[in-house]
Length: 81
Figure 1 (tube, rainbow, N blue to C red):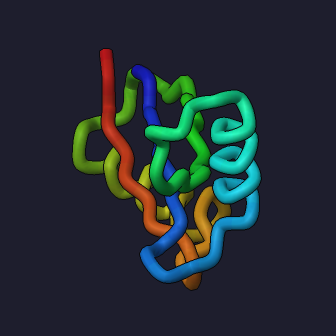
Figure 2: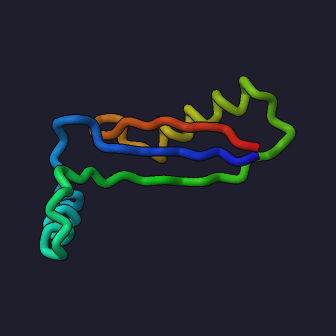
């Protein structure tokens, strides 16, 4: 089973990397781009023997403890397969 995790900065948190991407896109002539926010995407292969609720519990715990800095980042995850 695949666990897909998406981590994004919370609204209001400055995103210098996103700003650099936006400026570079503008320099390349893509003036229609407004704001850019940078995030992380992680794909984890999980043990198929885990039940749905236990898998979701572990996914949430991994995000809170390691994969996302919950002070400045939001996260969401989805199970596939």
